[in-house]
Length: 359
Image (cartoon, rainbow, N blue to C red; front, side, top):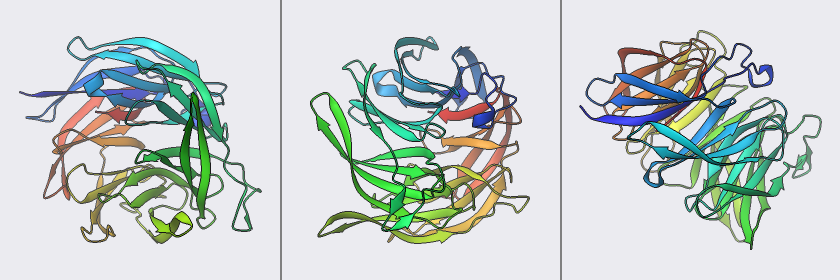
């Protein structure tokens, strides 16, 4: 048997703002995935306050988590001892706004970007040489208008960010239906964000999470409020990089209710994209065109749980684990045919109010 260690974040205290009125999670759950059977063994948990989003750097033995409190919130760094199943906190810092909900770490581990849905901004946090949060060095406030179109009637609701290359950042604003492109500017200890361009999606789209296409210039955005996927392209023009909307692809899951998408992700090696649909309790499956990154909807599967808040493909690409927040469990699927065929393994693993799977 080969075991792949992974972590699960959870809502540990009641949080109506975050859609977790029945939260009772243990904090950060430490588990192993058996790559022979898909079985999951839970080793234990590290208590923490609403660690709803996690980012791991397994090679460096580091983990970062945000604490999604309704007032305030922190970025916490841990040293991960995989063999012992132990997480040791090495630093924590207030993120500068209320209710942090998403976290991105740059590949060189110099800084973190923390999105605050209810706090209305994205904070940039400098990390020290050991990966510990050092200081909040910048705040990104989404614009109220783009190209003369006023979106100020709605509050800003930044939900996620995605670092592109070494010096650009994509941000989704769910409240104002915007996707925003920034240049990351580092001046000594300060990290700034220079606005480059923005794309106003149709009102009511609700852009939430982001995934990069295999070739890197196209991005897929989960449409929380309308369902389906917005396909965005970064286009290089004489005036600099710009965002263009390629199209919006409808995906209603299994048709059992409003889909209300959450996580979207691209398989690490195959031309397949997945979209979790929370109310429909399904996972939509897309084929990615290898020539131009277009998506073709290939169908949907039942996630065998309720409210698939998040999912992740395990290293090796043959297993997918879903975090079903409202049914308090993980469900495990085996991937075949280039990731287009998902078969439930029969594995249900009890984890209270899970929010994210981090391999």
